[in-house]
Image 1 (cartoon, helix red, strand yellow):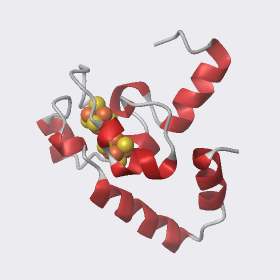
Image 2 (cartoon, rainbow, N blue to C red):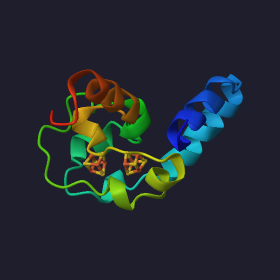
Image 3 (spheres, rainbow, N blue to C red):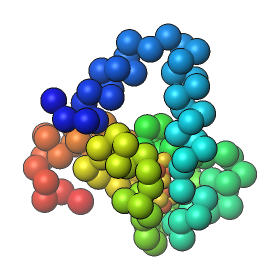
Length: 105
Ligand code: SF4
Ligand code: SF4
């Protein structure tokens, strides 16, 4: 089990209050607002932490650059993927790659 899988397991055991606190912590660490791909629409909608929450809800149409690899959350949670706002959460991308192979972009 890698770091990400262990974190998911731990989060499943969290109480709702602990989960809320954890999400607030991730929000405060999220670098997305400083990313060239991030849009005003996403900002106005308060969209953050796409790595856990999944794709943007119709606010981010184009991939310009992704600074997720520089984010402390990537290191802390052991992410393998990036571009979460357009391609889906780490969990979803892992699932897709497991099904279709790593060549699918
Ligand atoms: S890894 Fe990316 S989406 Fe996740 S908190 Fe960091 S900057 Fe935001
Ligand atoms: S998920 Fe990556 S590409 Fe999308 S806004 Fe955040 S840092 Fe930028």
